[in-house]
Amino acid sequence: KKIKIKVPATVANLVCGFDILGMAIDAPYDIMEFQLLDRPEIIINHTDHFGLPEEPSKNVAGIVLLKIQEHLALENGFKVTIHKNIKPGSGLGSSAASAAGAAFGANVLLGNILSQDEMIHYAMFGEELASGVRHADNIAPCIYGGITLVKSSAPIDIIPLNTPNLFVVAVHPQVEVKTSDARQILKKDILLKDAVKQWGNIAGLVAGIQNNDFNLIGRSLHDCIVEPVRSILIPQFDKIKAKSMELGALGGGISGSGPSIFMLAEKEETAKKIAESMKSMYDEIEIKSFVYLSKIN
Ligand code: HSE
Image 1 (cartoon, rainbow, N blue to C red):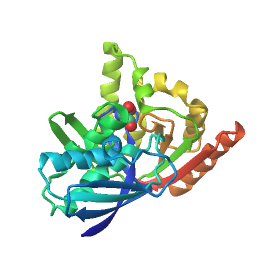
Image 2: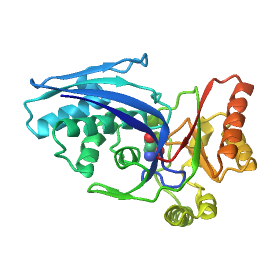
Image 3: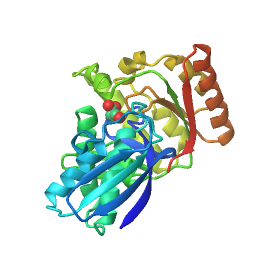
Image 4: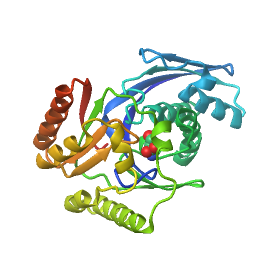
């Protein structure tokens, strides 16, 4: 039995919703091929040159399959070939795609025995291996599609939200920002006045998403807690944000833990202009970058 699946990139946090909000986009995406084996072996192959480990216990997809195999006491194994296009370390949910894809693919081969939340449960082992934290804000939209709210990750309580008809532009500059480092630099305590601002924005963003109120979405895409600390790690961050807003973006910020930056736009024409300006701002300082224009998916 063999299947082939397409696994989307995801933008976590959506600026103010650190660890709780995320959205799936239609580009870039990975392709994963699965084969059910009649022996309890896990085989992982990559067709890319990112140098990711292929030993199952050290591989994000491998660990998810090992956990599924162990918990369900399976006598079967899986052979997985990963064609990775979502660059590892981009902040576009590369590890989540491998983890969620592994859980999803295994579930199809096993006859759809797992619920979406059970797939998320297993996929979080992959995120834990990649970043040391069992966060579900990339995995949940990867499994559910569209935009999701992780109301709680233990116990898993995922709220799928509406999918506004918006364009997403993401730029990935070739600088390294490790999720584990980008988490370590965050302050552990926050001021009540900052928390009040932040939950006002999160509530506003969720209301805007549910009501297709683009103006409210734009007004709510602010982060006074995480972005000021992390944006220092991303060259041209302030300039790109300011220029994108000038070109008509609704708003945006760091994608996941960076270094990618994303912007939302109502019109394709605006999104294209933002994409060009992002690229040229990295060309200016001789940093190679990749730009993706997509929709929330
Ligand atoms: N919510 C996580 C973070 C996403 O911002 O650290 C990491 O991909």
